[in-house]
Length: 308
Image 1 (cartoon, rainbow, N blue to C red):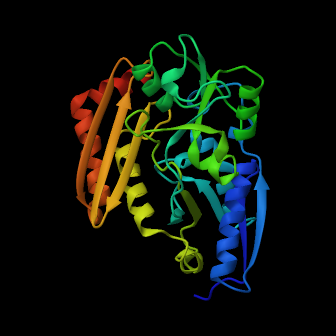
Image 2: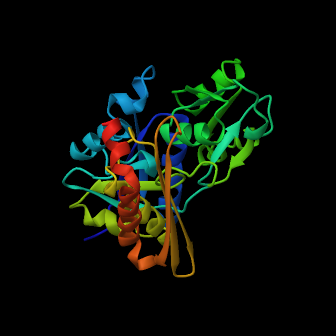
């Protein structure tokens, strides 16, 4: 099947999402000289509802559904997503065809007053939108006041700068992509805050039958990142893959060996379950299932049932 002459990218309209779409567009133009690439910006339900936590209004899939509708209706050819926002199971007829090279996967502490999380005083208000971050911070720093924080990256930074929080925790990748890396006071280690599944990676989705796009996007796919994210998503799928559950998963590759760490916790941090495995990278999905099953054996099913 011939390569298309024109590609329309569906994306959310937040500054970070638009950066991501333009990044993909730039790479596609470099890979395929003469290719026409256009960007269709959209506002999703997840962007519109900012006064309720994601876990209570349907999860991160709210950032994806409108983009998928644009693909179905033929208004766009591909959609660019932050992989941490992509549900673990795609609707019938859709495919994740490429995962780009990962940016810094860590969580970042941003503060105008304090250099690191250890220096935050008793009762310091720390903003985060993530149950995963909240549970891990509560477990290690029970003296902090962890408070909800929604909105795009600029909105969250503005709330910090207005003094509503002593510190906030964001994904390092988003800050670096928008040239805001200087706002990072501390990159939290994976032992302090295990990243979200897919954090820092970009994924490209299209309709399953668009095999012409599979060829077009092959060069964008980064094999190491794709194998790591595959293992992480397999772990999450084993545990239900819901943002209502504080769940972390992070894989790294050294040579042909993939090491996957997984975590599930009570939101208040009173119980944190961890597992880790290393194995052949070609067994990425199986390694994810094994870590998920081990967490279930530790009692993850009880955490999930209590939060259902």
